[in-house]
Image (cartoon, rainbow, N blue to C red):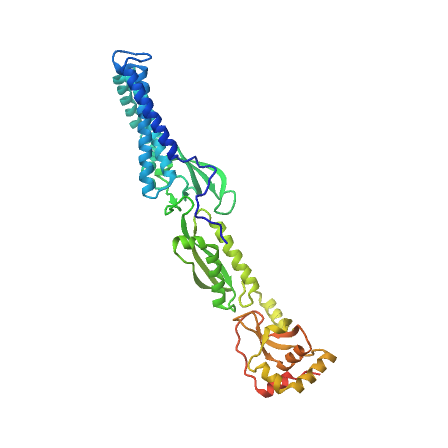
Length: 443
């Protein structure tokens, strides 16, 4: 049975998400300290004053820092509540919290200028810096920061998503998104599969404006639940039973993706097409976008085991054809005697004639055949056909020989199977006279 994918996956590379309890405690601490520092500053406890007025002391700056921290905590809590109500993920909160934290730090730096009484000079310097930044607007660093802000606010993809960059032939899981780089845990690369390799990729944010990005986990509800349509291909011989092959493949897909079917309500289905060497069955199913190889492995494993044990279906492979070798092989095959299999007697049932009636009507003849078999052995195998509805066989010729062997206590009897590959065949009409002639032991 497939592993349970409903829980949250743990990724060793992804940074820790914002904890609601710690954020609340931090907000309370900032409020207490902010109020305390404000009261002390208003009562003349300033530690050190850089100029005239209450807004130029160290105590005022400490209170200002606390208020910046309060703003960060409140914004983070509000974001946490809004994203949780919209059924978002913790990684989205973490991304926005980083933006709020950097904004609080910038506000703290501005507070230094206010305390030092240099706010006007700081504003002028900031304006000059902003002008310089505008001059660099087309350069990579500024473009990267702009991309970081836009992606953080719009969130076309987020930490934990699996994305593809077709322009660069890359695929990876997002583990970090900084103002300059998008960091990926590469998928594939070292292995020929869609599995994380542990190799870290740093994609400059500036390239995000010009690169096409495919988010394969955009529809996810939880970090471990992102579903896409996938398919597994099986090539089956033309003489295999169609319904049996389709049933085996669908059951394998349903077994492997049972949890996903329950979560999405979408059942696997089969689409078939002809092929040079048989029939192609494509089973299509919903799978976890970040764990496709596991589910594909389970489906192939379950279905192949069923194909190996079921005699009504067989897998096919391409072959090379040569006229001379083909003629030689056909001629050799025609000259060969039919292959004889030893089949358990209890798996053989009557065909056109009921074995019980034959036993009652021909008891004396069956006794004679049993004596002949006991003395000389079974000189002519019984002819049977496989029953494609179960794992049994139907006797075509040799009912009396079969009953004689059963009377002798044989567990298995030599048989020629008319349909050894598994194809359905029409049982030829057998008259009572023909049946009697075939039923008599050849001496």
